[in-house]
Image (cartoon, rainbow, N blue to C red):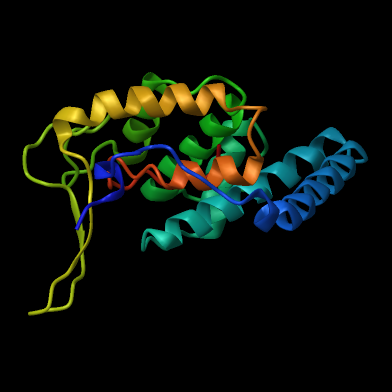
Length: 210
C-alpha cells in the first residue's frame, strides 16, 4: 500500500469544481454576513465577538485531538492577550497555551506562512511537555511516524508520514504552494488541500485557523 506522499503525482491534487460550488457560495455568503454584522458593532462588542469565535475554534479543535478545555479559562486567556478586561478567573496551563496560539494566529493570519511561524506555534502549544519530542522544530527521529489503531491485539496502521529526513524539503514545497495559492484558489479547496498535507502526523492544534 502506498501512502499519498508516495504516489507518483504527489502533491498534484485534482478536484471537481462543480461539486463544491454550492458550498463555496454558501460559505462566502456567511462570511459576508458576518463581516457586515461586525461593522455595526462597537469596538468592544466587536472584540468580544472575535473572542467568542476564537474560543469556539479552540474548544472544537482541541476536542478533535481528545483534549477537553475549560471554556471560561480559555476565554480569560484570549481576553488577556487582546488586552481586554478579565474576570479574574484562574487560567489552566493548557487553556493558556491554546489562548496564546489562537491570538498569535489571528494577529498574523494575513501574513505569509513561514517555517518560523510554525515553529513558534508548536513551541507555544507544547512548551514544557515531556511527551513531545523536537518542540518548536520539525521532527528528527528515525522511527516511522504512524497513526495506529489502539485496539488490543488487532492494531492497524491508518497512516504513515514521510520520514523525518525529507520533511524539511516537503514543507518547503508546501509553504511555497500555500503562499502562492492565496487569492487564486477557492477558499474551501485551499483549506481541504491543506488538510491533505499530513507531513508530520503530530498534533498542532488548532490546524484549520489559516
